[in-house]
Picture 1: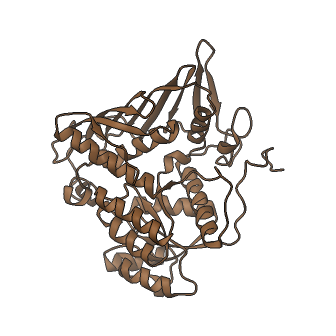
Picture 2: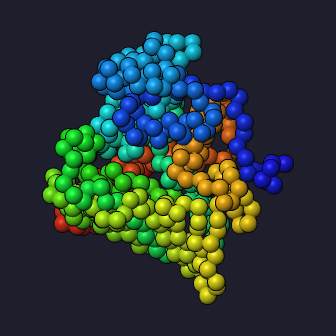
Length: 398
């Protein structure tokens, strides 16, 4: 019996700590620190190798920061994939948190070397490259997982499983928004991250839609379990002038015929990381806000409102309890979600390498197929916008 009161509310213990490498994430990179925080909180990995920057000096000093031995601090990821695959103590997996345009080349290099891949979103900058990674994953048998950390908040998993259990009846509409404000004013000429996010040669056909819209799309699909069959999208520049969109309005059609909408913007003053989900069925509704991640609003039709608070018991489902670590009143937030993500990634990769079949439903990771659907969604939005906002097919089974 687990300390949570149910046998299925805990993950299996690790058989060993896995060896992890990083591509990207070096000094000055915020995204790398998010990943590394999740790795450490999961307590299932050791970071032992890295090609942490395309700048050799930054790669060297970053390796020192991370405690990586000099002989495992690589100048480029091709050399790293070859060398680590040849070592008896080589890495079990690699995290790739480089800018988008490197994803396909880096991921394919490690997969072909037999190394499991953890890849930042979006999967690639083109659908062709995304489908190629799906093909390589199937051919090699190597695991490829995408990092969508917001769905590893305990209350998002609670939301999904309440929907699956019929708590709100048949899903009839869903609304997702993701609002930030950093792109409202003139860009910082010294910001490399802001610069490449506005370069179509490096991000593909969409900027904000690929950057945060892919999170919103993934969240909507995750909590509803519905495919998004069609999209009608309009791109806008609502902040300072820039060459690519900072705002998108998207109408959706779900697989069960229900309507949906996504609004994303990086030019809404006073918004920081406002990822908000509202889902309504015939019998009730659920609402979650990333800036207040420990609370889930639940409304049954013609009944008092309930607020379910992250913790153990008191309405929490076993699938969500696995993601909760502290008693109520002790805050958990995005770093804990990253830790949950890296816990499930470790379990999946260890099971593949050890030849163990895991219980159905234990893990809820985003694999190569769903990663490619995220890229298809971005391209479908761009196609719709370019055609004047027409309905466009946006679901694939690669």
